Image (cartoon, rainbow, N blue to C red):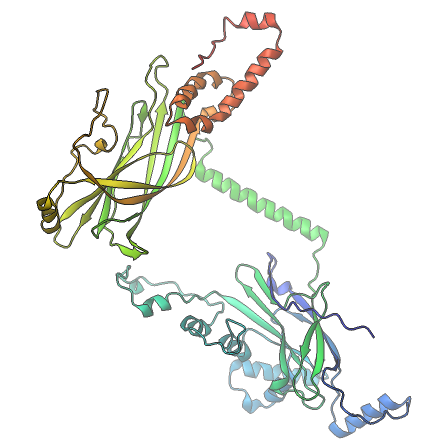
Length: 562
């Protein structure tokens, strides 16, 4: 006889469904296989008698007055459908044992079942979301598979949380607290705020694997399947549906060590093609209405830049500053726009972060600002005959510290050239500060604050007012300090990205000039869409007859090569 194919994978599976969970149905089949223990000495079997099963059944009814539970049973269970166990039938038949409204409801249902001929299930039963077993099972859940597990503080608090759908009452205005930020959270406060309360409904499909005459004993109850559904339509089934896998195996303890196998299948009614098509039409109509709603918020016309103009939009963040000498740091920054660059009138080109205390991370003291800022600027094409090359905007910043006595010190200066390519850029800029030689300057900085400062912060790079040929910093003493980390999201918009023949050659001169500059070489790669369009235009011209090219040469201006 071939060995049964067991499934060793008893892990759960997660499904997502947009249909109502009330349509979920499962088919569970359980069967006693054999004894897994050593064979006990048994008496020889009696001679075969065709009336043997009938005589045994009559003997059972005569001795116990009850029907013998089958060794194989199959049941189809719906979502939150209650199937009573033998223990619950014996308990709720007695009206004096019913204390809660749920107990009295179960009492009435059991009386109706008895009048209708009794329950059809004997070994397969269920615990719904409202039963006491569900609360106890969630309270006793383990985080690991260790037999010697010691629950952590978080596990104990999560076990006390009743993860159910709750009718949340609206928050009254009087219940709002004026203390929004807890500046010094205690350890107990941090632990309590890590406890989540996700609304989940749970259902257990159980099996009573007791021997004949011992049905209804709690020690023989085993969980066959656990189903959890949340408000987002996520369905967790553990163990997963059997499908093509083998049956699951349960081995009981004791002397006999009986072996049971069971399968779990999805018995939900499949949707008809007509209903599925009708549902898809409803979803398409819903999505189209939502798209129209979003279009109404954005507007019917998309804002475009002028011809020959490049729009640069930067969503930036000053993430952190690290490696500085003093505590309570803040950053002052401003943006310098070179020639041919402009910004809207409402655009703020400078800002100051909040004062942030540092914390020790590794070997450095780090101040996390997470300060957001937004920059919008335009580059407009000027006179193409100019010999000067366009420059890119520069963000200048200085890091300062402020102590308890309101003494501030300059901790460092730095500059950042805005990235010339779109996308995400995380940049760490080192800083320096001017120093005076001698001990007196350091004592003054420590006791009364203050330090040498730059009158013009653009001196960090090449000052905008410098007109000479060489900039000498000989004799200027500086000291390396810490560094500042920026996170920049850059967006670029230009009509050069569109493959329109009216703007190809006009914008090409701008691209050549920006591409020839060493610091702006990546811009040429950014606007390479126009370059490809130019090549296609040249190939189209080569395919035309020579007389047509010579005729149109007098009317079409040729682009100047760098």
